[in-house]
Image (cartoon, rainbow, N blue to C red; front, side, top):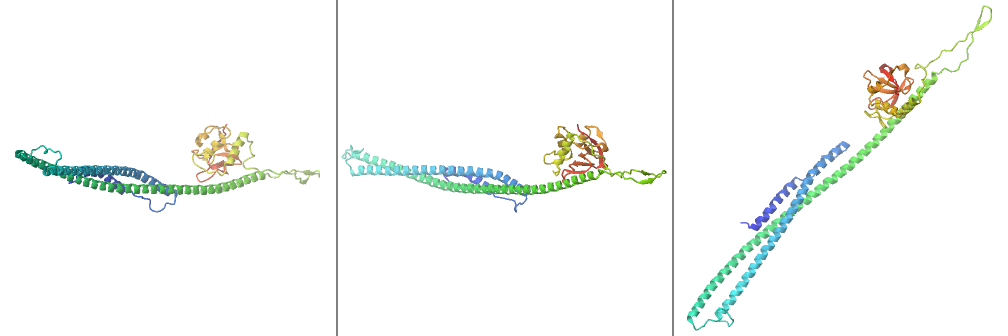
Length: 399
């Protein structure tokens, strides 16, 4: 049967040992199979690691607490051992002292020592007294023997308690060692998880930077191509305008004989190659600023629901262009279409808004010559295009 001391220490250690074993058994470094090479893959791996770190951090904290409990239990067990040993030492000393006292008493009784003892006053010649002395000696001896036996039993009992305390201390030391090892291993695993997470975060950042650099290069190439296209379109428009202006001419005479024999001169005007869109209309200074703003955005990407400064959708471009001269427009082509009086195609002037399709879902900025600047659609850029007369609904002139 285990002693009270041993049971108390073992109970104190039991829960800690059980919890430490359970928690440590559940702790393992798990990472997704294979190395993720995409940003999404890295982010998913990082999210999984963060979730695992959150879970395992609680386990590590619990293991630390259990390790502390095991250390306290070990300290208590060591104190129990010291107490038991002190009791054993005291009992042994008491037994030795009792034996020494009995030895001195026996020597005084049987050797007739001259030292003053309870028997020194007895008259040796008095037989009755001698008998009583003998009887007293027997009683005293029996009592002393019982005391010695009790001390021996106490000594045996205390020795057993000391042994139990030693066993409890050994168990406590083993549990503390196990709990400490579990905590250290869990801490190392936690550090490994966090180190891996830091590595993944760094790899993700590098991939994002590479992606941005590639996107920037592609964007620069796309803008350059769009600007070249826009420049070519502008050059073509200017060439068309120049070709549509008649050069100075000298009247050409044709001689005919009149009835009076005189020659008459008939002036023949050369055929004119006119501009199919009519002469360029006069442009207000404010409308010219709107067109200039729109030209400055050529090549910038289309992006839904944006109005600059780096990306635009169709109504976002018209809103920003007219906003640059202080006219506020809603970011909605159908709403822009009904804010001002309608204008027919042949009456359009540069800076006017041109609306398309029956539901008015597209709008551009007229720049003259049957051309417009607009932000067409996803994947495209702000550019110059022919005004789509077949889909044209009407124009408006913001004011």
